[in-house]
Amino acid sequence: MDDESFESMVQALESEINAERAKVQAAYALVVVELAGLICRTAVSAGVPSDLAREMTSDYWVAVMSTPHTVIEGDED
Image 1: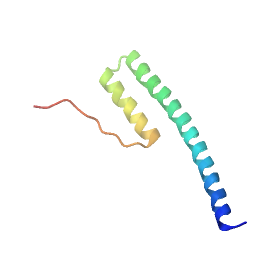
Image 2: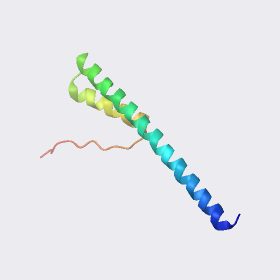
Image 3: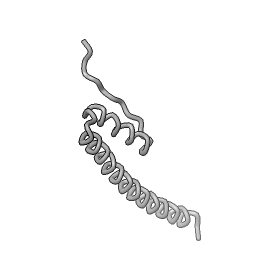
Image 4: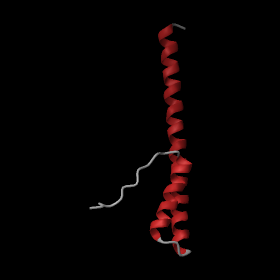
C-alpha cells in the first residue's frame, strides 16, 4: 500500500466518523430541545412567570449543551 492510498483511506474513514458524529450530535440536540420545551411549559403551568421560565430553560440549555450564550435585553435609554 502506497502513502497516497493509505492517506486516502484515512481521510475516507475520518469523513465517515465525522458524519456519524454529526448525526449523534443532532439527535442529542433534538432531545435537549424537547426537554427544554418541557421545562418551560411545566414551569409556566406551575405558575412561574414566563420570563423566569425562559431564563430557567436557557440555563438548562447552556448547562447541557455547554454552549455560551448572550442574553439581549431591551434598550435602557
